[in-house]
Image 1 (cartoon, one colour):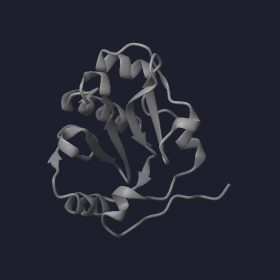
Image 2 (tube, helix red, strand yellow):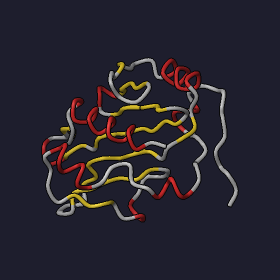
Image 3 (cartoon, one colour):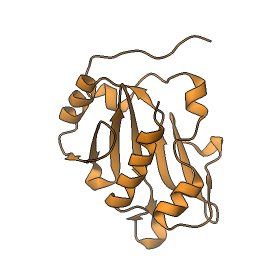
Image 4 (cartoon, one colour):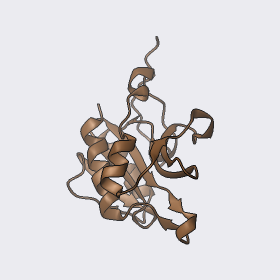
Length: 154
């Protein structure tokens, strides 16, 4: 199987479209439905079926109504310099301390980009239309999920 892991130098493209890593890592869950239930206080979480997935991501949904509650991007190659360039390109961001080697949030805290070693991943909360579009996770809960993802990132 060819190795799809590459090092990149340029900027914001890094945060938005990176080369996928090998299949074995892509198939290992960084977050499970049980993690989502525990951290978010939600019930009835299941992995989103493949035909409903957003490209280059995995997600978890509420079984009762198929509402996607959490989206986890596929892990990507990212050096500290690449991650810093992505942070600069995404100018409206806030540092998230205690998560991986480096992390920041965007979109009002509804998305966290985290780097551990030379890998990065993006974690985003879904929005509950039944609750007037409120995010399923608070910034603190999303940070806790990002911490868990970082600990499982290889």
